Length: 425
Ligand code: FNR
Image 1 (cartoon, rainbow, N blue to C red):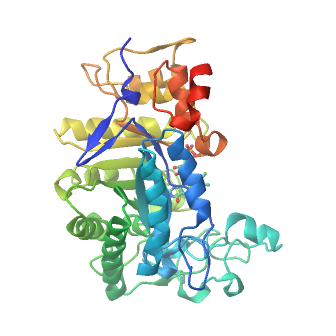
Image 2 (image 1 turned 45 degrees about the horizontal axis):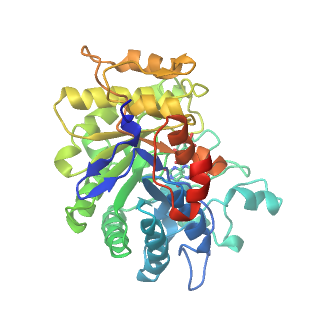
């Protein structure tokens, strides 16, 4: 039998992924909140990201890494706003790459969702609020987003003691321009550290998403108002990064394809970011040198009403829809699927390029079949996505790639040190 597409290599610019399985970025809240090591990756990151590399992932992403000190989600999140932070990243990159795995970094700014406490820290300290106060390294007075928190309906976002977030101040136009520059400088530092792939984080209600959405962006300068103005910051960041990184370096973009606010009062009143908006952005990406759109969703407002959150593949269907729209325009943009991907057959079917509905031992994989039906073009050839990103399953099973390969009957690379087990599995 032929190798499933999932285990065929994929070349993007000058790098080759050995299969189509990527470790999705995951915050670890494990860097120093202050002092000379502030925001620098540590042994924790070498060990955790390193073990996914040992166990066969094609590409391992370093978590959301902030381009400015006040853009960190929490005081314990990593940054690349200073040259001193290059060394820690270099150590991670060296080890991951020594295992034949590529290393990526997700560059981010949390905007109005910055200065929160590491999830376990507020519980440990017995605090009701998830906000990071000054005593644990937070910056309550310096939380900034597209718009201030003073005159708006935030539905529990910032307005009570129990809120997770601080009321933000509005960034000045000049500050917005500095953020563009800081994304570019952080991208340069990433390349200097040996990173193979850069991803821009424009999802989950963080700064770039905040600018895209009419719910969080009420600006009246050139960065607010019309669709063109709300997408301006994102496109400026893409262009600034593409300008400073080598042509050989792939650039990915993670986006919240929808913020699931369509059905809500706030969404009806103000409008919201949806899949159609994402498609409008997607078709502009190839010309700007973005290679892959990583399709996520949500995170901009607690009132979101998530469609099908309990169904596997709920993002996968959206990814398939976007992929079809991109292909209908004859554009080359790879699409990444993420979210509740936990099983071998499921992952295989999402990216399978063979023109058949694949069979698993239990018959046709129902989820993938349903997803296929939703997005198949007339010739029925399109897979849902080109790669899969997986997060929580790697926390449960760092060796998930090897298990998937074994389940699908594919021989994959094992580290020489593990060969004895491989032959006896
Ligand atoms: C995440 N996720 C995430 N996403 C992102 O874009 N940047 C990040 O830094 C993080 N951090 C993070 C930490 C932890 C502990 C988890 C579990 C998740 C989201 C993640 O990348 C992924 O999109 C979702 O978890 C859905 O995929 P899974 O977990 O269903 O495979």
